[in-house]
Image (cartoon, rainbow, N blue to C red):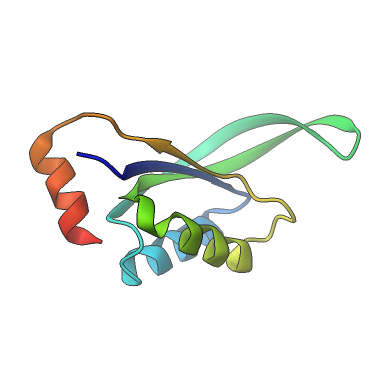
Length: 104
């Protein structure tokens, strides 16, 4: 099955992560999202190494929705440059992959 994506978005607050995930599900842009608390992030920002607690939103979608997801998340996100990345899902539980396709 081609065109199925796994996505990864970091958020500064749980409320923001829930808002983004719920919006994307309701708009049928994603099949589902998982919200993972207490992610420790270390990154280079504005000339210095920084660390922060973040919330991670991961989930599943289709390639056709990638640009719409990026556009909507950028509007809703509080970061100037939010982490919104996608990976190809090459294999997995066929029934689950079919569910993703059917859901979005």
